Length: 49
Image (cartoon, rainbow, N blue to C red; front, side, top):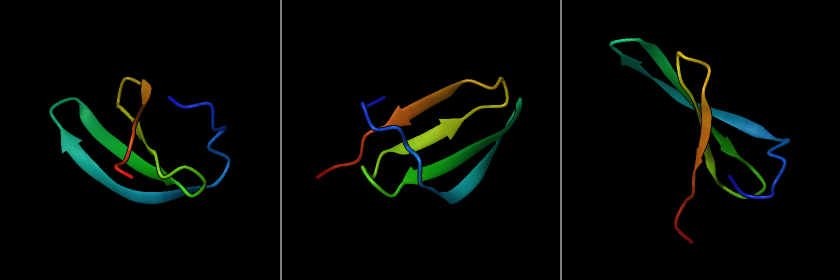
């Protein structure tokens, strides 16, 4: 993920998977999408500028 602290996140949505639900949030500061998986893994997806 970027150096942004992602302090202001907005809920984008959820996606059902075989293992549970992925949850998506967008950072208001840097526009990166933060994904949390059912296994509690967290990763970021950079947006296009």
